[in-house]
Image (cartoon, rainbow, N blue to C red; front, side, top):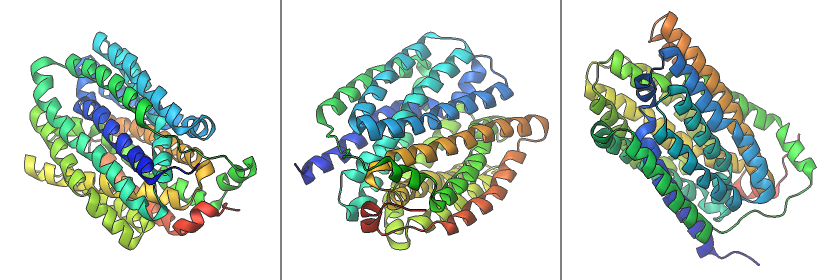
Length: 396
């Protein structure tokens, strides 16, 4: 029996709202995890390695998550993963040892990673093809809104009450969101084609060019992102409140630019938008290290956030939807995320050593250099029309 349009729109709404609530809590502490681990006794190298582990935890399981999402269904995987956030938050609230905290955060992001391919797949499958841009734009808007408000909440609550209150709040909200997802999400997975279609898609050169580009961008992103708060604290001499406020303002900028990004993608296409996002993000964060004041740093980090969290995240969903089909979409999203995650983990490790043994500015300089091969590889990616993407099995 066909699923009604109202039911499908409900899926997008439920995913957007529950993701907003979950990310509202996680964003209140995640941006200052380096400072939190440092407070628990971790060194700079330990923090870099910790972020490498966290990145592996977020991205690597997405391959398994994609396979499971295509096998057992999107909804089941989303609900189970959300429930597993609860023990992670409880452990974070109890421990005072940095490596145990790293372990809990890593497991938390493992289950985030497991469910994420099903998010993108369910959204693409929950609306008509002509509405892909708006569906992904809506979802990304709520994600960006949570990551804008969350650091602001953390800036006020953590200095006053500590980290424990946000960790325990996260456990409660995760339970509420899992209940909402169980009651209101509708499964969208369809019967799969022969496994040969999956193999054919996985070795397609078109996909390989995209994966190569995504891998290089992951290296660049990994070299700098874990060290933004450390650089702001140690080099730019911003206070804890200023750092949280800077992240919050930058995420508000990303949030407010989500719908304009969706309009740009609709006008120039997801591939070109993705290329612009890569170049813009790498060069804006490179310029950020030369900031001379809080507001200069905030403006440049806001540009970085707009390129990464508005333009890139929205164009990623529409681009991947245009080069995959329903039956194997979650699997391919998982493969892409896993490769990207491994590269981010490697980039974080390299960045920590470059910071420690050369100069804190070196990782940011290398990030700018890597943006060129990453964006140029996208020129090789050939996207299909939305109609062809669903009906056509990609061949070698």
